[in-house]
Length: 415
Image (cartoon, rainbow, N blue to C red; front, side):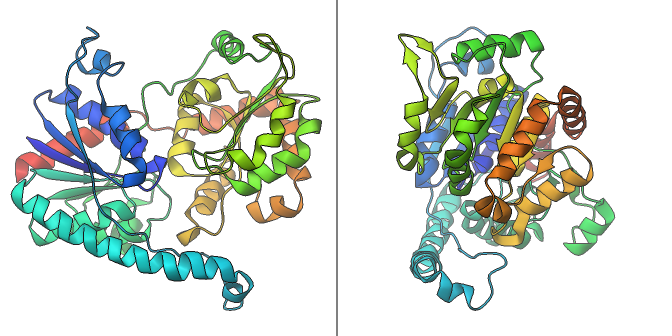
């Protein structure tokens, strides 16, 4: 069987796809898999699919270094940029963003989309897969539209509480729509005319994301050079960073360090702007004296978040799924102006269930002290942290990657 996997645009579209690929290989080692992604995430995907450490998983723990079992290729695509909640005058108040993103960015995005259509057409015509797995986002849209034209079955996975534009377009002809959020199936199916093709599978996360014992958490703190006896707050805006969260941390960091260690993932785009915070990262030889560390990016997020007592994060669906698997006390700061406001809806859904604490991004901009007070409240209340951990952990759906792999095999064999 030949399976094409398409994902990119953000880390939240990459890691679930990789988890599914691993399950596919375990389910059927003879499966031929090709992974298409955008230029920005190409290196990440190559690294994640190259056998080395992963060889032990793919080949029964023998640790043999062999050729990569997944062929990774770049694919052209174009993002349609828009901002939720903007009124007419906002386009003039934010004129530089309007010109850069909404005019120039969308012109380039349109031509990238057309390029993706032509590129996908000729590739799929020459190397027709049995089934395609589209992990949401704009990177998969040209591929899905061409697959529809060529009558190649595809499976869509939607992680968020509200489907994005690309998935809304692709859902109508998908063989199966797998969802990461527990929608009320009848309503969801009726709204998007799925006629029984929707299945709640959860969000695939790597096996490394699992609940960490108190003893293991202390060992991980020590491994990252933090004081194992002191509470640790991990703050992350994802691989690219979150400007408003970082700016709030810049304001409140001295106060935070009075009662908690802090690990900050500043993001590749934001790191240089925050390099001044390195003055708080005080080392004496190999020993960290200040209980503050900052990274542009950390490749062992399962361990860093596993060590944390409190995690502050954006509200992307994949990150939430990873935190649920780890069973952590979480403060979500959803970015409200994303199209469809899906981060806000992800956060509101969990807040109603009492599974997370939420601070609105718009409030954080003007009141960074809100984050300070909420972190302090959770750090000083083990009972509240335990309540949040239990409820968030209860939302995790295990076996998502395996079920998605099974669906792909089923659809591919029906062809």
